Length: 56
Image (cartoon, rainbow, N blue to C red; front, side, top):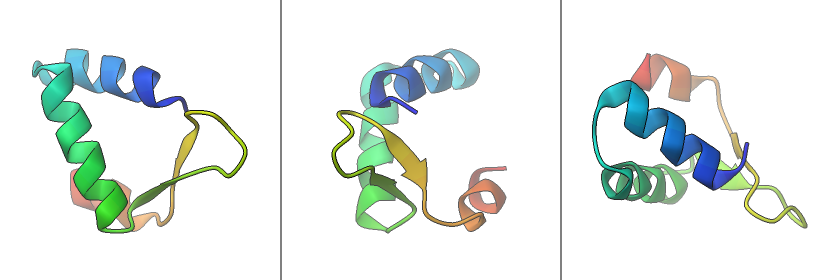
C-alpha cells in the first residue's frame, strides 16, 4: 500500500491529522511492524500479523 494512501485512509478513519498518522507510521517502521518494499516507491507492508492485534 502506498504511504500516502495509508495516511489518507487512517486520517479519515481515526479523525486525526495526517501528520499524526505519519508520526505513528514512523514509530511502526522503527519498531519493525511495517517496512518498505525494496524497489517499490512508497509501497509499505506489514511485517507481522501482530500489527493487526496491536491496532485492532
